[in-house]
Structures are given as structure tokens and as C-alpha cells.
Amino acid sequence: MSPTIILGHAAEGRLEDLSRGHDTQSAVPPIGYFLYLAVQDDRVIGFLNLLVVERNYALIAYLGALPSTGSASWKMLQTAWHDHANTLKSPFALIFEIAPPVAESARSSAKARLFTEYSRLRGLATRKAPIDYIQPDMVHEETAGTTEQPADLYIASSPDALAAMSKQSYLRLVESIYFDVYVRTFRDLGEDYTRYISRLYEKLRARNEDIPSPSNSE
Image (cartoon, rainbow, N blue to C red; front, side, top):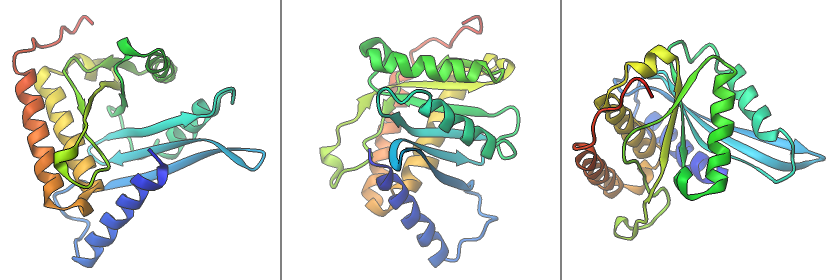
């Protein structure tokens, strides 16, 4: 997804908030949209979209770099970590959606290794959320034409915080991702998009009701 798409939607959402006179004391947690570019010889070789939700987690919306560009992805993550160290207090969660699932793609597996190693070097534990996750469709004109795809949801946090997470904890996190991130970012698509996300979340929740809670020994 082009970085201008998610940032364009985000900007429209912020302007809409201002036009309605929403204040910073709203019950809805603030969200920050950040774009990092990796530049080499006056050309962009990679970019990172980071969404920071002040419920103490950050979602990596997109991370990509051209092949054979060395540590571009790593350096962008380093810069983002440094920039938001004061916002994301411990314990916090860093979240990364990987589609298609790791088991189906060598590229997805490489992304998971990068994410896991990056987190490990910062003293964080990493877990693939033990739920049947669905990545919402992000750009469409009519919800009837959506094409969601299954994805793995990776979460990095303190070992104690991850060990304490139950199945319901993961579902609450997904609920926040769907409604605090997706709905607010793409609110200009109208009420149909909100209804679409609501139906998708209910489907995901129902699908995961029979999945056993994860063992803390994972």
C-alpha cells in the first residue's frame, strides 16, 4: 500500500476532528501517524508507516525496502524506536501484521525473523497472537467488494506482559486495532466502513471463541 494512502486518510480524519471542535480530553485515545523514509543517493529505498495509539501500543502499518539495500528496514525501526521512547512506556506492545501468514510465504517468514530479532535485542519477548486473525480491507469503494485476507499478528512486549495475556486480551487488542486504527484512519469512507469493520470483528470473535487459551509456556 502506498504510504500516501494511509497518511492521506489520516490527515482527513484529523481535519474532521478539528472541524467538529473535538478536544484532547475525548475518551477516544489519541493516535499519531508517522512516515519514515530510507533515502540513498537521492532516491527512496524504503519506508515505514507507524501508528502510535496512546493505549500504549504502536502498530507497524507497513515496513518495506528495496532488495539489496542492506539494513534500511532495521535503521528505520531504530529511528522510530528512538523517536517514541518517551511515548511508549513499559509495558507497551509493538504490533506487526504479516500477510500472508508466515507458514505460506518465505517473505513473511523473513519479516517475522526481522521483527523478532529486533525486539529481542531490546529485551522484548515476541509472540504470534494465538488467534485466527483477519486483516481488514483498507481501500475499497463498496464494502460488498472487500477482499480481506488472513494474516499473522505479531506482538512484542515485556515477557511478563505477554505471559499474562489471555485469549480475551488478544481479542480486546484486535478490537482496538480495528476500531481505534482502521475505522479512525478510514473514516472518510463513511458509516458503511464502520459497519463493515463491526461485522468483520464479530466474525473474527465468533471464529475464535472455540480456540483454547494460549499456554504461557509458549
